[in-house]
Amino acid sequence: MTTITNALPNIPRLYTGICEWLSCVIYLLVMYRRAPKWRSITAAAVGLPAIIGIQYFDGAMDIDFWIFGMLLAVAGMYAVIFFGAQTTMRECLYITTRAFVLAELIASLHWQIATFIGFNDHTNLRRHAPLAGLELPTVCLATIIYFVGFGMAWIIERRNFERERPMDPSRTVVMGSVIITIVTFAMSNLSFISTNTPFSGSVGQEIFYIRTLVDLCGYAILKAQQEQARVTRANVELTSIDAKLQSEHQEYLQSKENIESLGRIAHDLKHQIAALRAEVDPEHAAAGFEQLEASVKEYSAQEHTGNSVLDVILTSKVKTCAQHGITLTTVADGKLLSNMSSMDIATLFGNALDNAIEAASKVTKPERRLIKLALHTHGRFTVIRVENYYESALQRDNQGDLRTTKSDDRAHGYGVKSIQHIAKLYNGNVSIKTHDHWFTLTVLLPH
Image 1 (cartoon, rainbow, N blue to C red):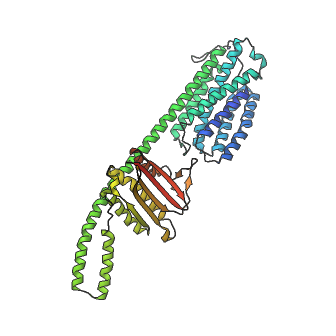
Image 2: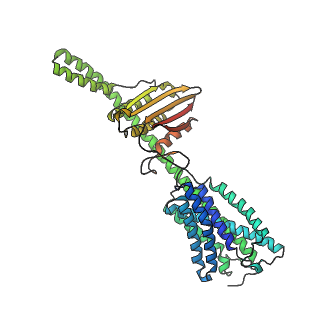
Image 3: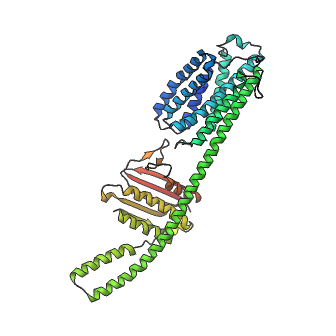
């Protein structure tokens, strides 16, 4: 170990604590929060003096407890994020690593610029330790750097996080972020431990430059890691949606074949029943034949909208509704779907009606098990509207969008996504509204 030439004072504890707190606030603003707003504000307000207090407590400890002090600071940031967002422990650990590296980067950049200006002005900042850097010019400089630095971080991070749902990073991603953070912190502070390594500096200003540069690289690597995780997650969702589309299409083809077969059977049975009526006409037999004829009508009834694909879908869903005691009312002009592929029609209407049937089947009173489907034109748009009565409570995310009511929200919820995906293919949009226990899904497709 050699002595650092022109050693500069360490970053004041106050600035370090403020940077750590601001990093936590940035991620609380951009990430998905299960906690109500008042809880997030309270956690942030309590976190500022707590994090600064931890920094001064660390400064009072012996140098041998330096690593313990850093772990204590990370724990303070973890607590602020955990209580402020009410997130899972795994997600909180991932966010904390991001926040810690960001805090180290901004704090190092600020103090590097502050000491450089002081050095050029021949100001011996070391004489003011531990209050070095608390002069008014340096405070003003800190305000500017923090505003610009954390402002840029907010702009960058808000595009990387989805506020309507949690990230739920995998264990591999979390462990990778922890390792990246540890390596970044170790490499950026290596010169303070020993200058006799290939990666250390020996001059004060040089050491601060190395520290800032390594922190910047660490932050960039963590961002790249998150981007890769986002791409992987998006590919998984697209694969799931594509699999569902294929499944819906195969279901349509099978339903079409079954309905055509049932139609032929029903046609033959009608003639057989007519022949039996001519031969035998007792009252009890007539009653039995009427029941048989009614059951045949159930299978022979088919929808005629002007679109063969939509006819198959509606005929299949009418039967499903009958099994659940649901009244399905349709007013549809199938000719408006002439520019859509059979697969898209089957998926769009199949998903919309499946969701409606699932909700309506949970209604306790049979007379309220209602579903209405309308397909018509309005101005320059084709309007598809599916309405159903519901009783179960609806869950919404932070942006007011509806969330799946199923327990496994990672394995479900692709029905609406499939509808949105298809609408986007035809330059349309999807809206969902609820009013007075009526759920309305509207799809607008331009002609």
